[in-house]
Length: 286
Image (tube, rainbow, N blue to C red; front, side, top):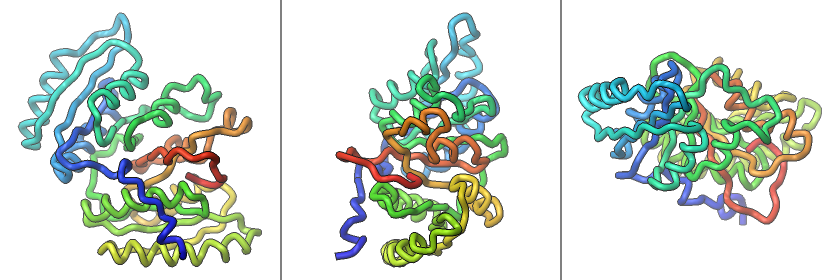
């Protein structure tokens, strides 16, 4: 009966209004920019913000700085701002607190030294995003936030890819932004492109029926994350929405999944969403 029956929108992925946005910080430039990014979405979904500072053993707890940040944020935004100050590992504690507080979104600034292209079994940043109980918005840039006008929705033939359509529509409506569906296919694989096009048209139709302006673009390329980030930068895009991949092949344990590489290389904010539990997972960008 077509893809629209199979979209499988998971309501647990959608951002809840009147909820909580968690922003873990270590007072790096990126983490402070992440705080400012959280203002936008918190205002839209009428959420309170919890700024959680995590410091390592033997380091300063920045209690006074955290309190001042809270006061300034509340004054500047009119939002309800709360703070938590904890000792430990920022990535481990973020997932724990997000689960405990039932937050709807984590907004995290990733410093330039946080790289995913290593042996990821021991990479806490990668584990944090993969195990997060809610969507995670990651920020690598130190540039101040700008209005979200164009959102990229990477798309392939995997079931997981279709799961992010719901939150993409929600965010586009919230920000009054356009959605740009982008698919990357191997240059020599014309069969894949031909098979993908009918799906793209149906998804595009579904999105437009929800009142969102939408376009689609197919790009030949062998490196999916690089192709998408390059497209985003050349076409004035402000956010990328992607699915994580739950299970890794042996090769991906060393080289990383495409979703991890997207977070690693993107200078544009990326929202990462964990897929629904399935008996098995197909390949492709998630």
